[in-house]
Image (cartoon, rainbow, N blue to C red; front, side):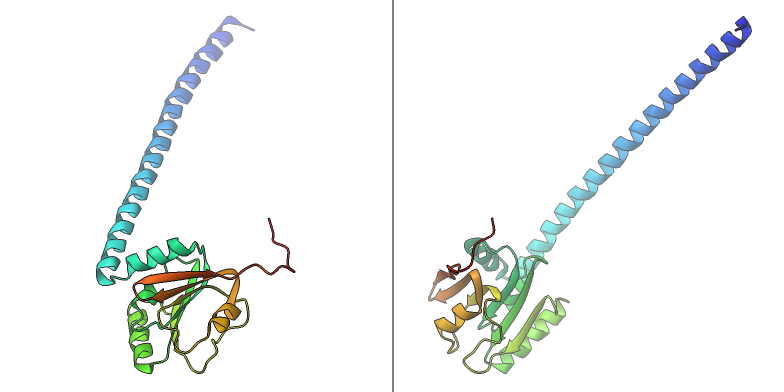
Length: 194
């Protein structure tokens, strides 16, 4: 190869190397900037989530009680039924995230109306709903409910509570100032998945 061609190639390769080096630094700086922006957004979301949780706690003092119930029962999702839901404050608070659907039941139509109004005001109707309880049977098929929170048995028998609970489902029953936890056993005739 002629000397002038070699010099030209060598000179252009050096320029190309410097350009790649500069652009590599720019790309690296952009990557770091994007990472930092993502980190800031995540921190902001955590702060906002904390503020919203505190605001919800202030607006609904039963939020902390709901958290204690979810922790004590160990239920990780599914259908929660709140028997004796009253004004719906605990019913709403039991919807700690979208892995839960919460259904409140109460015999008093006035309580049901108050609870529905409250749920609608929060834009949660669908994820959380309430109905009037009629009769001595719960309106669910067998083995359907993951967690049944009972503030008032409302004439419902323990056999009926156990009927609607899924295997390993939990009944959490208020007795005065304490709660009783009952877990429906896994049927012997059915193997457990591991």
